[in-house]
Length: 347
Ligand SMILES: C[S@@+](CC[C@H](N)C(=O)[O-])C[C@H]1O[C@@H](n2cnc3c(N)ncnc32)[C@H](O)[C@@H]1O
Image (cartoon, rainbow, N blue to C red; front, side):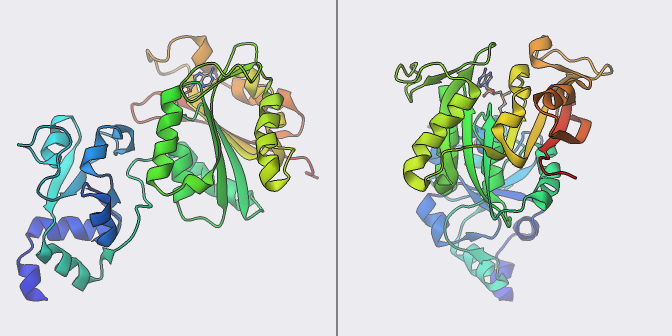
């Protein structure tokens, strides 16, 4: 064992120890079948040929990580550079590069740090405020399954994180976004992570200022088979397509998330979206009276202090505010973090 360990560089020993302890992220860029055969416990596979379509799956640029690669792994046509070098040139903070070799795998196996099979982890972080709030939500969710709707889901990172982490709850998720590209990314992210079965619906749909949803098909063209819908009609549409599978008609959600998305009218309809005792998690830009920032511009995308809670309460007296805080996203912009619950049977 010592003989093999002697062939591994000190840096590699240090990086791998940190990876298996969960203190350092590792992007393994080898082909999927190589990763499935053997990989370092805790590492995440995005094959080099797919990275160019998956930038959003990488860690934030300020967070260091290591790359595990082997000869012949290139992100684009620049065959002179390793993946680690190419990522560094594109602005990611690369702590180091680990070369796959027979000696490496022998050593990893001897240490008991070898893992096999599909990629089930993610490199990116979800909204830190959602991450912080989920234990509070899960403590109060009583069912083994929970239905989650993300409005303005973007590439689905928060939902994918929710479904990929260890939890007593099995999440069934729906992502809605006005952008065709967002829903495409959402689908490919869940596919890559082997989480396709967690998706209940994905819909390209845009909510207009008067509260009507316009649905679009996969090509991003207006779906003329579906008229403009109110929010409750959109839920009926989702429910009808599930009815054939499970007999479920009255579709609502145990958790609705709206992250860096703001539609005031929708907040006044919160109770329509939730099952009894369901939750709304909101985290979006706010004028906190202290910080000045340029984007997003305009009142349309920024809350005033206390406004979100008032809008949510106006949807029903059953809506109770469990958390109302000002938080900050990575670049320092302030966000309103709100957790509300529809407490129908509260004493
Ligand atoms: C800033 S991104 C946030 C995405 C994601 N929630 C996140 O935090 O990473 C806002 C998303 O809302 C979507 N969006 C904006 N206005 C919308 C509308 N009226 N109806 C539906 N989606 C909308 C955009 O396409 C975009 O993907």
